[in-house]
Image (cartoon, rainbow, N blue to C red; front, side):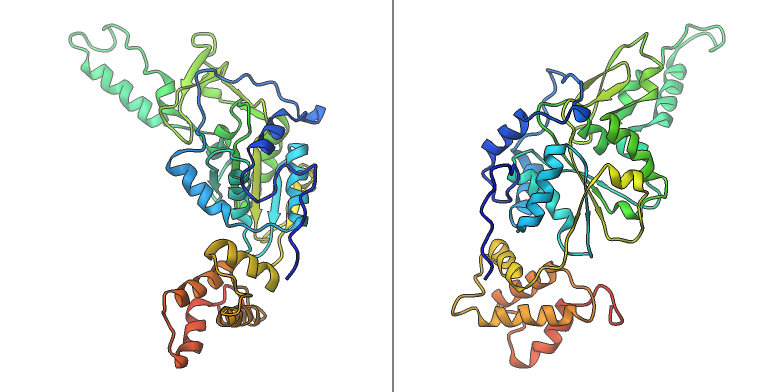
Length: 356
């Protein structure tokens, strides 16, 4: 079995957990001059830490990830350069899970998740504004006033815009904070053709303006609004601008369904994940299920790994399909000798290819 890589001195992310000391190095590290941002944290805002249900979901998903040495090299390159990480590969190789692994390994709190569809636009990730709700409430306030008609009656103040604004996952990640949040932008290749280009300015500036707040900056210079984690967070936004102090750890995933413009690629650090071989699969099974398939009593599980790799020659399979198969055998399911072919056909159905 292949030996696990020895940690390199410059690595911040190692994929082994227990990374509080490495997180301290991450926080204290100097950014490249062109990635040094000036946002000032709101002293009253407390981003989610390493407690609670959201963190437990991140930790459980991330701790079982098994990165290879080349993966660690590329991830750490992105961390040091404070650049987005664009991860490509076939479905099921662990692209999204890598984001959770980074957050769990460096104790950076729950992952912010922005799933992309063909209808997604940049503003969906930056902030949400319920303009209709605000108009409806203004109308209700007018109805509640007794006496004179609206034309001659007392003026009704519009409801504060802050009640109808909430930062999206990208906007929340860009809040000024002493340590970075991890943001997963999932399946960017499914986006409208304009989204990668629209992200360029945000990635370069490390911030953005909320026009609805900028228009009111003279009357209300600082407004407290909610975040993607917590609609009641009340984080202060001044002059309508959100500006990071530490660029977030941005992981973009792509199944390779489209090409991206060179200007977008130039601003990302790229990582391609190949399907895992037998040695890495054995490490994944050990990490996820606690089963050492190389042990004397692991012959049945070695056979499942071989079957998985053989079936993968005819169409794509996801690693979790192998984990499902081993989990079922651990539970005693499908154990009859004549069940083998039906068992494999049930739990290892191809994702692509003629039999998908």
